[in-house]
Image (cartoon, rainbow, N blue to C red; front, side, top):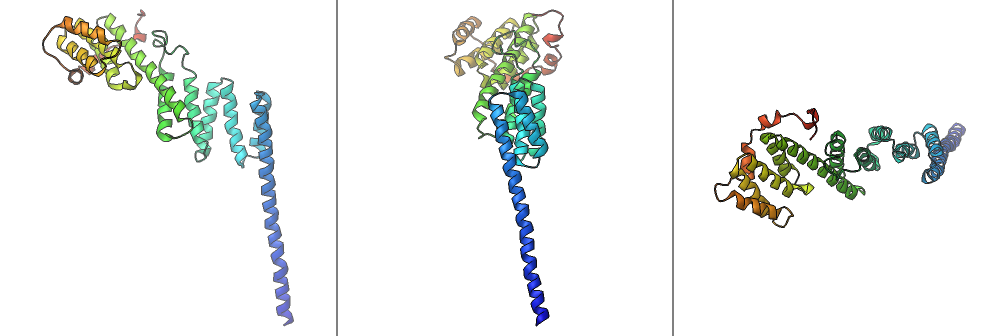
Length: 293
């Protein structure tokens, strides 16, 4: 009986000791979380005041001291934001990519992906609506931005940033379409009809969302006329009038269609399928020419 009582007392004494250790661990974890959150709040005050050196040091300290906490992960994201706010696009891009690599499952991943696209957009010339100045420039950044925005909208169609992403995507698509129109004009000015036609057909096919299809159809019809391909020209003008009868290009299309007279009509889609793409693709890009248009 005494032995049994002693065992019972011993077991009773051991239980509070285990509970005490667990409670101590919980208190330390709670203190760690509270301290990291307080440090993050102080760093955010510096961030909002745009005190970039001080904010950078504060977020780096959080990343170093509280790297396992949620505040530590957010501090890494804010460091990328600081680079972005200072127009350090390459550094910001690297920061956002690194953050997604290690935190892809967190709610802020959509924001980080959107900011990757913003880094590309910010490197596009501000005069993106002007032609030919922006259209003549290298389009790699525009294509990178368009791709990043498209991927973001596919992955996060309902994200807070989705509306802005769609607006930016339309701008990038317009700039890409304008570049294609510029290249087509370049080829047409040198009577490289197949290359010009190929570019214009590409605009009609791929850039309906950019709002330049009426312009592309009018130019396409004009190029067909200059190339002696009257049936295709009639097809381009008729499609313009049927699909975009209220566009600014419609009056010119009516005039040119009347000038082409009655006769056979080859619709744009039929002409597109019959176009010799290999020959058009062999043409050099304008940038490869020694003389600028």
